[in-house]
Structure formats: structure tokens, C-alpha cells
Image (cartoon, rainbow over all chains, first blue to last red):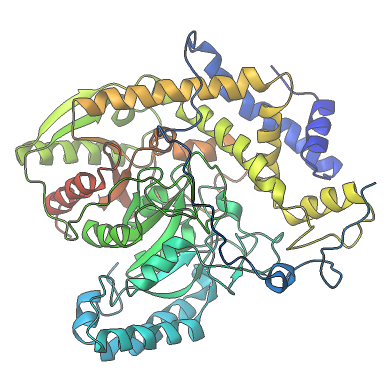
Length: 94
Length: 474
């Protein structure tokens, strides 16, 4: 299958990436080449194969419910692009 | 290339020589700045660590890594040291805590001299995707050192450090180790805590050491391995007591992967080297078994679908809200996100986020992501089946030796194919190591890869030690 220019624009929007026209054009070319190569996967018979998400048979590990020292507020805020005294500042959402 | 600083054994015996060795290591890195190995050198911090290590030795403490001078890839956190991930989006963000792996190595006596260059967010096979410029091959600066952990590989291969940490998601430690002629070990998935490693592909990533030989790779692994309450994916599997690596106790059954040693993309010199390794193993009394991994040929599409899907999700956290760069032109929520990410990420990271977003998007999820996960299971089962009949598997590490800077930048598919032999171990979660064998006709190193069963790094590295013993003399 091949990606159209408008699909590439849609994916960029989903990914929250503002891209130039030139980059969208080169991505259209690259992604078609890449996924063209990936299409060889379609030839594999995967009937009745369960998808694999995690390689080890890991189970959830529960920590004891005790308070630990946590990141001090001032350290968490020290690299904020914008902040008030105690909070990260961000353009209003609602 | 020879080690240009005293060996860890020498420094352990003469701890008073440590400050001079650390200074020497820093001076070498500085004098060779054109190789682009380091993003930041940590003179002051290394000096403090050095004093602490000497004091602990004087007190009679047993430090398994005393005398080790190491470098750390700059996608691994060290408290208060800028963490760049080779990206502009983090804008020299000072890390708020130290990665467990680094903390354990320092506790064992290692001294960190700096943070090394990498492909942005560990996405690349050449170290050309760093926003700090490329790292260069120590034997030929027109060539790549491999990637994504290129800077760490250079720091060890050039002889300035005893070991270095990288991260291996699809070969990012084994491939540069092969290109630079050193040992690169990817431990079993979960063997080493990833707390403090910036996530790329969470079902694949492992913090992985570079070293000059298997013995020191094992020492470094031993010091940092084991469960960590800060990383729920770290495995609760006992770390072997044995701290000294020895040659294999029994003759090995070595599986030779037919599809890989006969791969059509393999450089003739590497094909010849693979044959020599097989002959040397046979002469030494080991048994070779030809094995077939028909599905592992598809590792590249499976890997790039899974890894980019996970990356697009992991990298969603870089949003210009809490740290790093925020676009000055942004006015509302969407423009903060879109502009900060559009300018903050470099082209390869943007491309991979696009790939990952696409394979997870409605209408394509089943065709790509779900299918890749299913083929991933087939690859894992295939590897487990051949490892049930053998001790280790042998393949070349890379299809070619170090290529020229710029040679593959315009052809993403060709670049992705550099990982063709390394990605199966990540997809299956198995431990794998690249061992330098010899050089090709241009003097560029050739690496051979060994894979072993889950959590059997000891057998893996002792088999590696056997390859080191059989290696043609230099």
C-alpha cells in the first residue's frame, strides 16, 4: 500500500509535529520506500500466532506501600520553560 | 588500538596513580575533539569521584571496579549533569537523578569522565544523527564509528577509557563495537535496570557495556546487573556469584546461522572471516551445527515497526511543558506542542515518530503493528528452538565494516539494513555480544556476534573469550 500526501499530513498532525512542505514531500517519498520494503511481512503466515508484547514471562511486581523521599518541587521546576512560583505555566487548555 | 592509560589492574595496585590516569584520559579526549566522541567532559566530577575511590581503597574496601575509567552515553542520566540525548529538544536539561546502572558502577569504584555522543535519542546506526555533529571512527575520521552509541565506542576503542556504557535497542552497542574493534555486550532484556535510561523502544532497550575484552565486559556487567525497585521491567533473576570469567569448561556446540553467514549483503571480507572463525572453532575441538532461522530474515521490518511504534509513544513526553525547549513562537496548546517538537527533534527522529505514529494509526494498526508483533513471536520461538540444541549462535555482527560518513544518509532503508544481524537478539530479548576478530584489507575491524540463552551471559562471554583466544595474532 502507498501513502498519499494527505495521509502524511494527517500522521504529522497525530504526531504533533509541525513540518515544512519540503519535509512533508521528502517524508512522503521516504515512508513509501520504507513501508514498501516492510510489505514483505505480508507474505508470512501468522494465522493463530499470538502477538508478542513482552519477551520475558514477567509478572507485575508490587512495592510495599510505604512513603519514599520524592523529587523536591524546586528540582522538578528548575528546568521549566515557563513557571509560576509553584507550578509549570502552559497556555490555557480550556 | 592500544590502551593509552594504565590498566585497571595497575591502578588497583597503585591507587595513587589514579588522579594522573583520570587527567590523562580527559586530556586524550580533549586532544582528539575532532573525533566528536564526547558531548561533555566532567573534569570536576571525575576529580571528586577519584578522591572518593582512593579514600575507600585506603580504608580497605574491596571495590570490584577500582581503577576503571569509564564514559557514559548521553541518554543515561547522571544527577545535575546536562542530559542531551544528542537532541536540541532537551536543551541541556540537568538530570534530576542518577541512573541505577551508573550508580552501581560508581559504587563498585568506576570513575566517569564524561557523557558521550550518540545518534539523537539513540536513533541511528552511524552517529550522524546527533545535533552535536557526528562522532568519527578512530582509525579513519572520514568513516562512521557506528551508532547509535558511537561516542562511547570511540572512547574505548581509541584507548582513553577502560569501558563505556551505551544502550542497545537494535544493535546500537554491538554494531559500533564491531566497527571499532572492541567488545560490545547486550545483556538479556531485563538484566540491567533501565532507570535513568531515556526510553526509546521499551520492549527492546538494554543498557549495554563496551570494553576491551570479554573479561572486563563481564566485570562491568556483574557490577550493574540485577533487579531494581525503580525499574519494574528489571528481571528478578539471580546474578551469578562468579566474578571472574573463565574459558568454557566444556567443548561448545556452536550454531552457525546459515541465512546470516551466507547473506547476499555480506561483504566478502566478512564472509571469509566467518569461515575462518568456524574453522578455528572446529580445530579447537568445538562442534559446529548448521542452523536455519528463516523468519529472522524479516527482523528489520519487524524491528523498525515495533521500535518506532514504541518510540512515537515514548517521545510524546517531549512536549515543551516541563523541561527542555519550548518554541518562542507558540501561542496556544497545539502550537506549543507542534512547534517545540518540530524544531526540537532532528530529521531522523521526526521520521521515526512519523513511522511509529503511522503503524499505530487507525486502519494500519493490524496490517503493520499487530502483524509485526506476531512475526516477532515467530522469530523468538525460532531462536529458542535452535538455542535448545546449541550453546551459542554465531553470526557476523554487521554486513559491512565501517562505512563512510554521508554514504547512507539519503537512503534510510540501506541505513536500517546495517542492523540486519543484530536486531533478532533484541526482538527475542536474548543476550548477544560482538567480539573483534581481525581487520579487513583496509585495516577496518570485523566483528563476530555470539548469542546465548536468556540470562546466560556467563556462557556467552566465556565463548567470547574462546574466540579471543583463537583470534589470529596481531
